[in-house]
Length: 91
Image 1: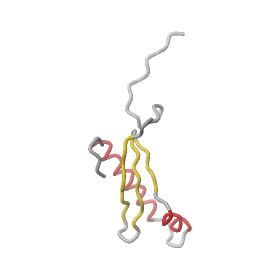
Image 2: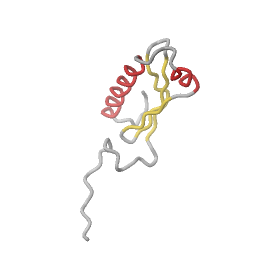
Image 3: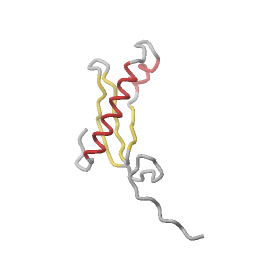
Image 4: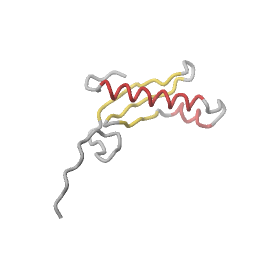
């Protein structure tokens, strides 16, 4: 995962999430239709204001992140978003 603006803490947390995804995928039977569709498309993890595009490399038994970029308009309400508490609005 290489991007000059990617914060180290986000990189580490995303790596843990991708490890969990990889472990879950390893439980999918080899003849499941999931693997057919994985050959046709990649996957995306959107996390903490970043988008990670990755694919499964079944031969190497690993997930390969081939692109990461900051989101242009990250969801401000996402629970993983590090934003300060909103200021109260007078009624």
